[in-house]
Amino acid sequence: MSQLEFLSAAAAVSMADEWFDLADRDHFWMRWRFDILCRQMRRFGITPGKTLEIGCGHGVLRQQMEDAFMVPVDGCDLNQYALRMAPAGRGRLLVYNIFDRLPDDHVVQMFVTINAKHTRLNASHLVSLSGRQLYSDESLAAAHDIVRALNA
Image (cartoon, rainbow, N blue to C red):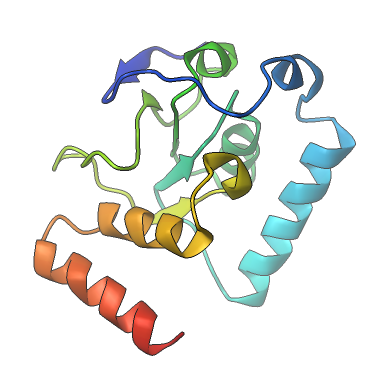
């Protein structure tokens, strides 16, 4: 288990805690979704750098990405129970609400989320919020949203 860092308050989430007892990295669903992610990354020529996984739960995807790509993956979730089950890794484990601003010294090159439906957010809103975390300059964050809107 990695040390948890509290950037936000822990909160109840819509994912049942029992899922984390069942789903390890050998579970068919966990293997399948990682395979799909890797195929899409190859399709679009994405080579991950330091990554932030939003809604990482107990860190299975984080662990898979760190092992496959040899990059640190910071995992964030509001579910403290799930985060405490995550194995130690190259990246940090954060109790973090994406509506809060990341500290300026927390720089990531990519973000990923697999279970966006459990965030109860509109997917476009989630991408906008997450993208804003990649830019410390507010004008770059606004440009991110403008470019997304123009390409929609």
